[in-house]
Image (cartoon, rainbow, N blue to C red; front, side):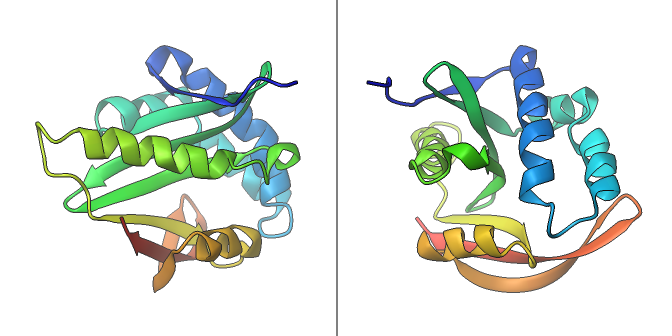
Length: 170
């Protein structure tokens, strides 16, 4: 019998795990949404070590990795801004979806930021951006109680996209 999934908060010295997972997950996740050359270019920028470190150290993002059996299979990052907890990243390998790992990563973020009552008030809303053409992710978030709040343009380097801002009360 497989061990239960383990979620752990990671530090700067483990951000390479996130980058390696992104290199596996992103091409499959976005293959029907974004051209492969764009996926590669975006990965090179968004998951560069210095950008991930900047998110963690200077922007206050917290990262988690989920391990299933002997394999790291997903990751999440989140940060608090005002009364909102922003889920910045939430990715699970496609061969490990449907096991509740995404929900467990979201719960790890909620638990972390709701427990931080000493330095600030707990968040009252969870929000995220999702590409408007990413139907599987949108469906997942809708099933999880999120609602579409707005449609917004997003620029990633030379590439323009349209995202939904989705949110739910917590």
